Length: 70
Ligand SMILES: N[C@@H](CCC(=O)N[C@@H](CS)C(=O)NCC(=O)O)C(=O)O
Image 1 (cartoon, rainbow, N blue to C red):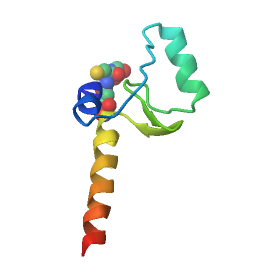
Image 2 (cartoon, rainbow, N blue to C red):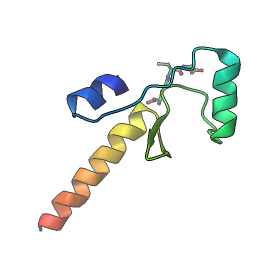
Image 3 (cartoon, helix red, strand yellow):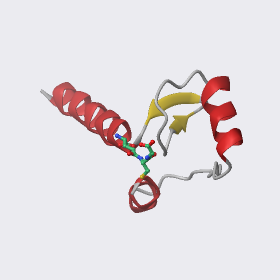
């Protein structure tokens, strides 16, 4: 869903596959990610979160832009 959303909204992304359990655990630990789910979306090396947080962050930016128009 996150990949589809990024494509639809014309964002470029790099996918890091974490199918291997130990690699995935190491990734969570190295990035201090408390959640143990995928996807984990980063923007400029900064963790946004999962799909839900990705959508929420976009909505937040759009909402701020709307506010600036008033
Ligand atoms: N709220 C998260 C949910 C992510 C989620 O549930 N991902 C599933 C795979 S699609 C997962 O990692 N399940 C493994 C688990 O819950 O341990 C989001 O929006 O990204």
